[in-house]
Image (cartoon, helix red, strand yellow):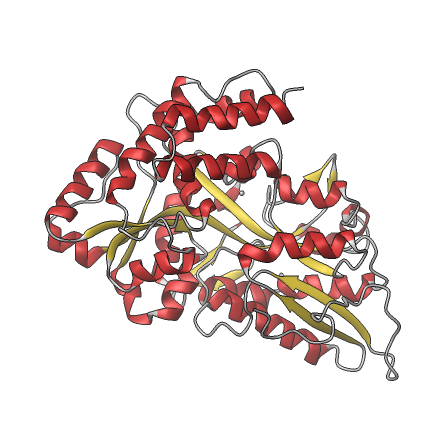
Amino acid sequence: MKKVKLCVLFGCLAVALAGCSREGSAAAGSPSSGSSASKKEVVEISWMFWDDLEAPTDLMSQGYARVIDRFNETYAGTYHCTPITTKLEEYEVRLNALIASNRTPDVFICNPGPDLNAVVEAGAAADLTPILNGTESDWYNSFTKGIFERLTYEGRIMAVPTNFAAALVFYNTELFERAGVQVPETYEEWIACCKKLKAAGITPIACSAGTPWCLSILAGYFCDRAGGPDNLARVNAGRGSWLDPSFRNGVSKLKELSQYFQKTAAGDSRDQATAAFYDGECAMLVQGSWVIGQINGANPGFEAHCGVFSFPAIRGGADPNRMIVKTDNLVMSSTTAHQDACIAFMKMFTDDEAQRYTAEVAGKIPVTGVSFDLDKAPMQLGYVQRILAGSTGTLGFYNESLATTEAGTAFDNAMVDIFLDLCTVEEGLQKVEDFYKKNIWK
């Protein structure tokens, strides 16, 4: 029986770190920040999440639901949490509306990078630094080294991570064998692989342009593989151009590869593209390792046929061993009247029980040094770990690594327009360039 301790694996994180089914009264539009206690003096808090906690097939969402239930049972008569759930695509709009109307949930989930910066700059996030450096220093010290890199704003820790994921290429080993193809290591080999799969009557890649960030995962990888991290740093700082040859090279490769997507990619959502993969309709899927819980929950038998490989290299390009990574993170409202309840709640997401579930059931990577049984964990997690162990560094989601949230949206939209043939590669990059000239490079 293999026991795993993950602290050592992620020293590279310090390099760069990445429908309302359970809603109660808080979900009806009245989050509990500042509310008075009930007759039993039970402190009520709210937590806002971007998925359906009753989802029967998403194992990570089920894990979060378990934390909610466990919290309410553990603190019965003292604290109680009512979740506010929404669809991922609607999450930011609804959260921003609640923040703007001074009804910020007590705790809410948030992406790292510009999304977190935006809620901090809006004054909606509590500074966790005094807590983590004070009474909760043991909690802080339990986390993996480097994990707070992208959760820090001007030296202040503004969020706590719950899990860690890497974006990789998932593939159907049976379909690869049927077509007689091998795992590609370079872009040229990847194109050759796609051609052989297509010739065998197999759709090579499932992708969602209907959920733009799914398409921009590929775009971001291609841009990084072509030009490396310095190019992005330069354009964010106003010292480079989106029309740089490396960006053109990377996005051109996205455009070329897109001819091997499923025919419905333009309108398919993330869930539809993922289903096309685990239902055996497509041979590959480029996604974060959070998809392991979704794949295995929806089609448990597919686990044995689901391999994982690193995003291929571009010959003559930059370091091919950098991984796109991200964490799910909890933010405490700056206006909550119940900090003690919120901290107790957030700690439960990162205690040993929750973190073991994260690895052994959902197949995501714990953010603490918890030991877990790799024999119990999904097979795909072992593949992800091995790839990460050989990585030389990490980067965030490309759209979450741009200067602002709006810049990320402009990038996503440009990639979709290029995919849909609404513009050329050069014209799409010019749109991003124009956005930066108007909004960033002032």
